[in-house]
Length: 186
Length: 186
Image 1: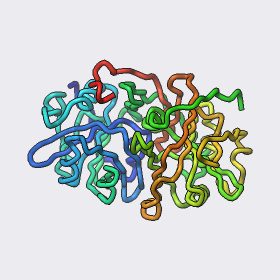
Image 2: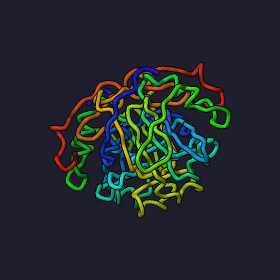
Image 3: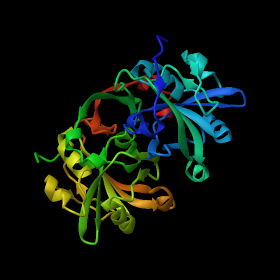
């Protein structure tokens, strides 16, 4: 991997800036001395403060029990530099290989969780399990984001958005319509 | 508004193609002879079949009680042609004005719901309330998509993705990595 992005502390209540646009995220977890990573496109912001995010984590994933048992994970937002890693992570199982080593990814530490962040990503959000009431029913986890680290540059990263069938759309240009927003809507 | 897109029936279990990338959607609803529209960026795919989608609909929205009481809505995916309408819809209340008339939008009909679709949008997904167990707790609605209509062209539309602060990122080019996917992952 090339140079790591320089990342800084970021307010957890502003996580929507990077998660609401709907990018593929890399979910890193740690349990019983073992680290793993999975890809995830089925997530939604649920609240600003506490900073809540809902994630569908299918039971067939090796990460499922690791996250349920540890009660934590890190949501990392990759850019298109990491496309190859995203595809490899999404098409292999942590039961068979060490995805950090296989993809040449760098572990980092976050406040509030033991799970490692992925330092090559534009942003990382440390999550603690907030509500497991729908894990059995839907595989739906509600996490609270307790720490965030984000690269301040570029302002908005080029992210991957999954459409199924092996096809991603990339985030393109940004447009502001702030002048047309009511102040209380911003 | 310009010419309406020609839309066709689409398999509901493939809704992820348009919703998983995380676009802003326009949620149209009907209750007690009144129609309304709201913007929504906090949603996630939850299952292929039945085709489930989870949506956070804040209680302050005029649409909240309309959707809860009617038990249905339509999720419409606008393209950048509709940017002005998206901003207006997100910054006004259906308690004060008729958003269809105000934005010059065209009502359509969908199977399985009374709520109107928005014919100017690239895709529309008719939703029936599947699980209201977390409406009181989180304002989280689980809908089943029971009908879908999508414009076959363009293949992937230019959608709006909200980052907060009045700024949207637009979906850009598409890339396929299908050849690197395990068949069972497609």
